[in-house]
Image 1 (spheres, helix red, strand yellow):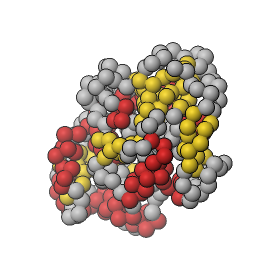
Image 2 (image 1 turned 180 degrees about the vertical axis):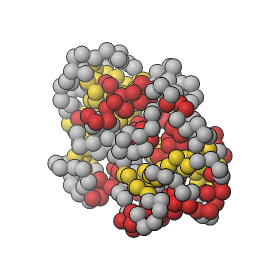
Image 3 (image 1 turned 135 degrees about the horizontal axis):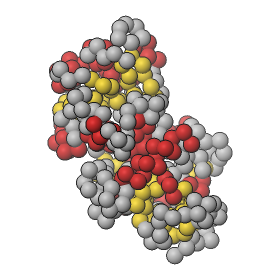
Image 4 (image 1 turned 60 degrees about the vertical axis):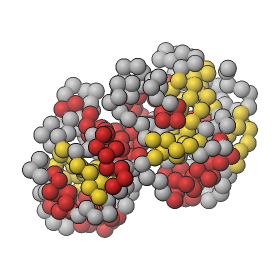
Length: 354
């Protein structure tokens, strides 16, 4: 069916306010855009942070959500990658109500969408794009570590003979970072989590998984051994983990040492990194895949992940395990609070069509 004249969307009226469901319409499709009936959308930490603090948003009320999956229902001019009825998943565009995902329909540039393979459910697909794009920027863009990507010539071997540490392996960001490290050919992938997730993270590609509550700098250094450490990726990016990452890079005497974070750099950690040799640079990456400077990565990633010959179909990339909050958009506030309270090893999902 085409996009209906009106449909349900969850609007956040203002900073600190709970979302409420009302009707809206979708603007006409521009060249290169597709319209998607959203069957599942993930809740990311940035969503409750925007609700509570107003980050990134200039106009209220707004529609949040940038992690979606569903069915293509309309094609704009100059589109060629998808057909009506194709299942897709995608990263929406933050601050663009028409391209957000806490609603029943959305429109996005087709270049940012991946075709969902048969072996992946919409609930699984809905939690892939946002965090994977963030990790991709951290690993492969110049604002991060700047490695060659796995789809580039030689990119699947850039980690040969090297180690990487992913702090917070059971988080959504951490799970996908481990898998990108494996696809990049790292010989030693070390992470940490609560013991309940150790075996799962090893299946994703981690070689050593340490106990999150007990592991010290010395434990990480021992796990790395004599393999040269390339960088540390901090999937949690709190003060405690940033300090741990800085100390580890200094302990291993890494030249041109970089700690990649997914939230703001903590000043205490930055000062520690500059306090002695080797000095550690902390870089905060933003996974805004729609940004013109990052389209070269996000578009290539979309192709690598999707389709019947992509990473997902081949079992080379495993989605986060979904945890569905029933009740659709009416339960968005409950889902946001669930993520705010903290989840481990899972991705919280709502289904806007319910």
